Structures are given as structure tokens and as C-alpha cells.
Length: 433
Ligand SMILES: *Cc1c(COP(=O)(O)O)cnc(C)c1O
Image 1 (cartoon, rainbow, N blue to C red):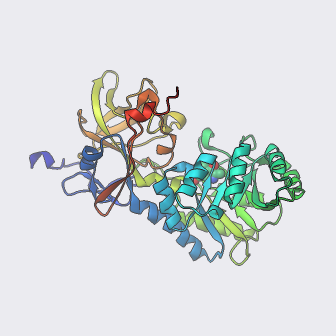
Image 2: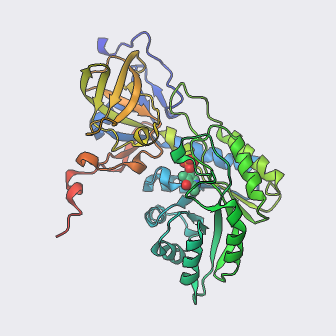
Image 3: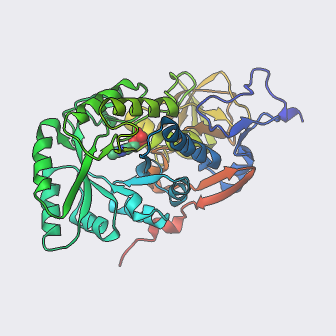
């Protein structure tokens, strides 16, 4: 028993970065969806994405409920597939009544494979190929979000002579700057996404001349990991200035908690209330008959997932280095955006040893947590990094020949693999000739 005795300082409550359906067990060990993290690591190996399945459902329901509570008769929630493009996740959200937005032919394929009705799918992209447009048309995708004039030309050619009609929105770039990292800010005027506000009337007019395109409304997505709600109101006001349409798609972008010391993000309720109140000011609110879409990605899945790693080596020089068996191949966000995470030893949560949690890749920049506070980490310890459900699996790679980790759903004390770990054979499976 002595090895399982809790350190007096160890927390009994997890930080808000962890899934709601997780806890510190009486033995002082992390449990996700009722499953013991150490046993999950033993059974499935590490690194592994452990997903609290009920959390995904809870958050999807929170969106749907907030829409119903607002009284908006036509409020639709589309999961941004790119945040966690995995069939099981897409299927779970579809079962909760969510639609889905995709940004490539591959994501469209996954959404269809997950059982989404094509009419519940939106296709985005600032550089869609003709093959992707044709695929959308053939599959009966509900809405295509047109991004640029070249795409209008391409649609015109594609639809010439066809007796098909495609419902579309156009993406505009309201000059609203969400207060976030440059790489995930998309609403500023100097953006690779969408039509500038000044170009929008011309785009609307051109689409109006193409018989096969049916323009239903406007779309904007102002950025990601937004922790304030004001920019969304400014976005709605700008969009409304472009005319009156039956469909308004306000994009995604609500931020989440990655670390205990980060400011509390707005709740899903507060976010939906703000959007609907803003919409109401501009004639798209409850009773207006307008369709209001939102496209949350991160907020639906980030906090549902914990990545488990195993400590492989320790080093003390200027810093105290703790190296694990994953890194930028399973979570690129710290390297790409300077994203901050917290980390814990899965059976000794909390701690005060200031460490650098490093990955195993051949890059000095392969650091998962620059300032981790761990409890005496040792080789063989399982490390838990929470809030890895969005844009982690999505951006995983095989860098350094690392097979990508499995995705394991946990709930009610049982675990099931929904994506298996890649094998070494997978790494050479596409070799040709
Ligand atoms: C990425 C993206 C989203 C989702 O963004 P989150 O910040 O993950 O909510 C929604 N819509 C579009 C068009 C996107 O590109």
C-alpha cells in the first residue's frame, strides 16, 4: 500500500483542463471515463489519446440545448471536422444531431463514412479543387461555402449544361480581429480566407448570374481559441451590413481551457446567448425564420481528451528535462502556435518539480510543456497531458517514423479502441514498385 499512499500536497480535484468525466481515484490515480490511466497505458501502450466519450456528448448537448433555450427555431450546430477528424468522433456528434463542416475531399469522405447525411454537411476551403467541387455536387453536400472568384469560375464551368443546383454560402472576411495567435486568426482584412468586405457585393452579384448556384447566405469565421465574446457581435454586425439572407453561418472559434492558470473561457451557454442576441439585433434572431449556423470545433472536443505518454529519460543541465515517447508527431500545437499545456504524473498528480516536458523527436523545438510542474518524475512513469482533443490527432504525423497513436474512447469504466495504433508495416504500406 505504501507506494499508493498519496503525497499530502497532491490534488484530489483535477484542473478544468481535464475532461468533466475524469477524477483522481481514491488511490490517487487519474481516471478518465471511469478507466484507470495507468491501466490504459499498460493495455494500449503510449502515447495514446484517451477520450472521455461522455464529454463529447455533454458538450454537443450543451450546444443543442442552448439553441433550444434561446427559442431560435432554426439554430444548427455543425462540428468542424478538422478539429478531430476521426470517424468515431464524427459519428458520435452526428448521433447527437449535429451537422458537420469539412474542408477537403478527405474530410468529406470521413463525414460520409461516419454516416452523416450529405445534406447536413458543409464544404469549406480556400483552395478547393475541381475534383472536390464535383465530389460535393455528386454526393449532395448541403452547403458549399464559396471562398474566392476563381471558385465561382470553376463552379460556372462545372455546372454548365448540368441540371443541378448547388446551395452555397459565400465566405467573407469581416475586419474583426479575434485576440488570438496570428496563425489561427482568420477574420482580419489581410487574410487568405474568403472575400474582402468590399468584394462581397461583386461576389454576390456574380453568383446570382449562375443558374446552378443558389446563394442562401453568408459565412464568416473570425478565428480560433477566442476567449472574449465581443468580436462575435462585431462579426454579426458586419455581416448584416451586406444584405438580408435566409442563412447566416457565424463560424466557430470559442476558446477552451488548456491550463489551470488560464482565464476561464466563456461557457457554451454564454457564447450561444451572445450569438443569438447579436443575431436578433440584426433580424436573424428567434422568430425571424432565418437559419443560424455555428461551427464549433475545439470547444466540442479539446477537453474531452488526455494524451498519455511514458517517461523514457531524465536529464539535468540548465533545465530538468523529462523526455517522453511522443511529442510533435502527436501534438504539434506547442511548436506551431506556442500553445501551452499542463502535465501530470498520472499516479502522482500535481507536484512542484519544474521540468521541461520534451518529446522524442530530433528537434530542439520538440517540447510539449516548457514549464511543467511534476511530482518527482522517473523513467517508466505515465504522464498525462489534458486538453489534447482538438488539433492533436488532426495534425499527427509519422515524423521520425513514429506510428500514430490510437484513439481510445472511455466511459462508464470501459474502454474501446476506435482508431488502432499504426504499425511499422503501415509505415511502408504505401511503398510502390
Ligand atoms: C477551423 C474552423 C472552424 C472551427 O474552429 P474552432 O476554433 O475549432 O471552433 C469553424 N469553421 C471554419 C470555417 C474553420 O476553418
